[in-house]
Image (cartoon, rainbow, N blue to C red; front, side, top):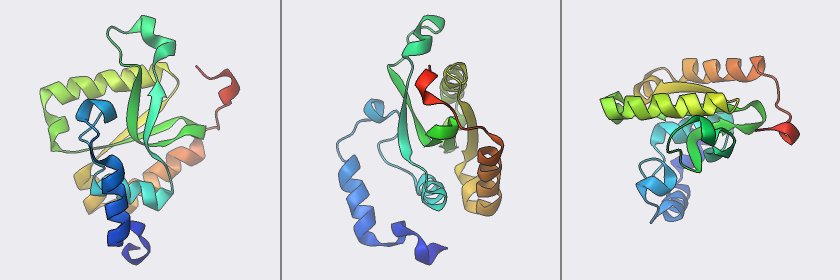
Length: 147
């Protein structure tokens, strides 16, 4: 699996670093770089990263919403958001922000699943199997009527 991972090639890593350079924490809604664990999951499942989800449809239901939330990895056709969290997400502030983000995305019709970096590192097969199980169980969303 590692041999086929595009991130094992230094030229691909540099390409991603160049693309993300200069993006601030607030502009991307994260720590300005994709983690190794996020890249492993996204590449393995061939899903896009840093997917922006507009919050306009539920703006009246929540106080002080950003125009969009970015999710680590997503399957837009299924409205499945996959968040891969590091140690900072154990802090009280991040727990609150994560709960709020999940509530907003749920109100928009998305399902949010979260994994810790350690889960991806230590039990990669289980994590990818769980994500695949979610995808198989979820219907495709008709985006013509999407919120």
